[in-house]
Image (tube, rainbow over all chains, first blue to last red; front, side, top):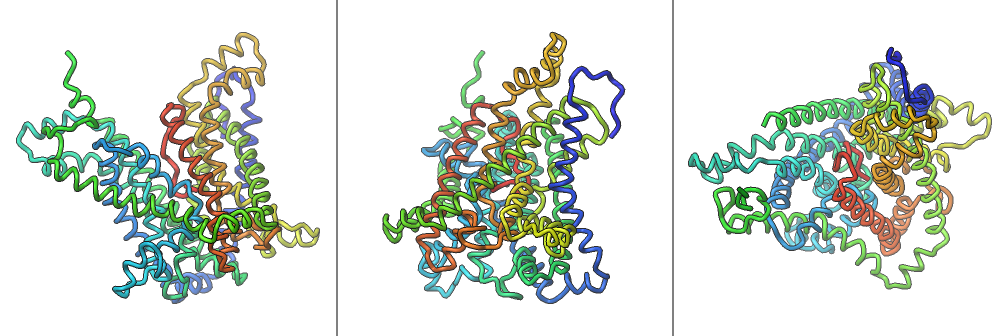
Length: 277
Length: 297
């Protein structure tokens, strides 16, 4: 970082930037570097053994599969919720709007025990499924419920501002040209919200991949069956298998950073898209 | 000429116009959306309070005044105060450096500040272990000097500081960017010292954004579970924060007790949501609803 040539009127550049870099290094960069360094100590064989063992492969499959399904459910219902909150007037709209942030604000441990109580065999929702032989808690269905809950706000909150700023004249033009309401939605509205929709989807998916707190209670965490990646990492840490844990963590970190890159790209495209219209 | 209100404010459409759906469709969409929100938002919220009083008011207050619960509340408050205030100081310093001066790689620095929001909670705890744990970088040195960080309170504070790292900076940078530098430059030209400029010009301008960042940061700090779970020794009364106390009670089959502690954190979450909605309505915040991936609590 080189200083620019302009004469500075305001003081404190060296001090604040120095403090920023020092604090960033101590709290964030050194710990992340240590994790990568720990993984680098492994040989390729050891690394492969850690990330391709049967329980790791099963955990990866479970994590990616269930996260994808939960994010897809949130994609559809998130768009619907955003649409209803922006376009329709009804009693309690403001309250429901504020409540959408609940999965962000509620500690994951609280969400975990609450969802477990609801979806247990004798729980408020679980008891309606029990007669059909469907068990939700302690199964992968329970993991799906938890991951849907924590991903709920992402799509709603990314799509909402786009719908709010939506120029109604475009819809009027479509209607006056003879498009049905359904066709207007499908051909005019949906393409406009698509970048925001995909951003929300990617965020919900990435969040679900790393979720721990709400899942640990509702899942039985049995290896090869209901153990997702964060729980497997936790298991390895509890057994002091730091190298194995760090290998899995590095894979997940790389996935998150790639997701972040994709999300930033989508957001950039979304803002460009809106600037054009 | 004033256009008909239906054109200007789509929210107020009641009659079926060319830009609205048939009544039946509207009712159906509203019903599905509300059912979804009811199932995933209202029911879990209500369940916390109903279960908390499942074994009566006595048990509820008994749990909250229990020795271990009180100690977990104390530890949670201590952790939140230290991590939030240090991230607050960092946030202000980082925002000052980034928005008041031009330098190379500025956007790269902003990306680095955002990094913790892309790291899953368990991994956030793990990275602290990789530095201070027995097999970590400083582990042998710490053991030789008999300093305990992992499985002790300092580790909990470090992990919490890591996961709440970006909150204040992320809130202040766009806000101060939008405000520019002219006011501070004018104050300096009029002879104010650097500190004086900051306290009397900058701080009043950013106080609502700062408060907003602190509120979100605090909610996350008090509610963090995954990262803290990795670095805590899980000793009730010593290294258990409130979320860990919930887990401990739950595993001891004291479900009502676990929900009693959970109800306190749920009230904190509700207060956070209300303050957040209020701040956004007041227009005090620059970028509503941008929490990153793991920026939620």
